[in-house]
Image 1 (cartoon, rainbow, N blue to C red):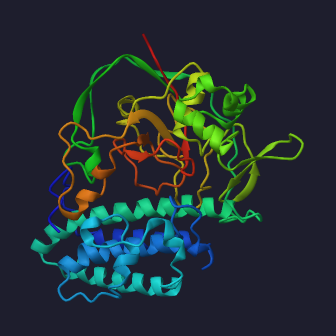
Image 2: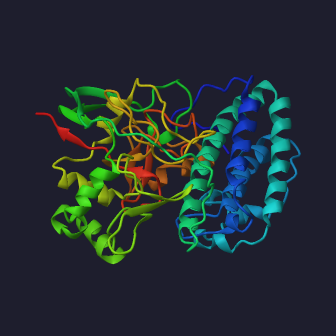
Length: 431
């Protein structure tokens, strides 16, 4: 594999602290899987999701294949056959087990995957300790990419197991001891921006970024307003009660087709009690009443645009979103020890919850920035080849690992996706 020559090449990680960060990220994945049984960790609820065991194996495969096999002299593979089972979409690295069939992989066992992780962890520990300066120059950007990649899969562990457990009639909780969010949402309102010539994209030489965040470039914005906080469950209920899911004039054509085919009448995981009773929602902490002041979550791009049309507004572009977000503290309700793993009511401030709580759909299609260059080598397959038929989301969610976000971060999913922690923030023209 060649160096990461495209996109943004991060400054070489300081060797001091690299090993501790490596161990912390790897340990966090194990901790997120700990509440789950071996049976839980083998579940695959749909083709878009993967078993927890597969996530634990795939991230291990990444480090063994991309770093150890190329930079650790004499590295011994734990089991070379695992390369076929745990390769995701890297065509350059050989054949892959079909994604929709990952739930069929009862073997290797969860215990064997754990042994594999420990084997790779020990080899990586040794490599980080003994690599010479020249080797470190090649390893450092790959290590940064691998750790960011594992953090992405930590979020997927939570989103995927939530979907799987929601299909069980017993509605088992991932962790029944998770705290229940409380509070009231701050008043609604807008933050205004005068528009003009702005810059978006990751600044060069300022830490790690994916290639799709680069290069930094100029955009022209007309004056606009961005909502101070995301749309709440109570506000979305008003849309529902006004016939939102029954009014085709509010929907994009493909979205209306999804409503009809899927018989959508509420966000994913919402259920109504018998005889028109109150709405409940399935959370990682179990079934709970829908809280009107919490940000609405698990809605598709189609639902977001329909709500925006109903509200007389629109979704922000990703350039508008980033312009408001840059320079602000990247703090919020994210995945950390003691967090609820669920959106919480907004606090006070001029604009709040830009980071954490819910991924926010934008109106921007996922496409290359002007001058985009993918990472070099195998990593070229990481982002660029998915730049079609997807929409950009910004800001992170309650399931995003602490420290993983930044203002330039671009997430992307097809417009019908609902199992991610995705929500809505409105915008409007300010002319």
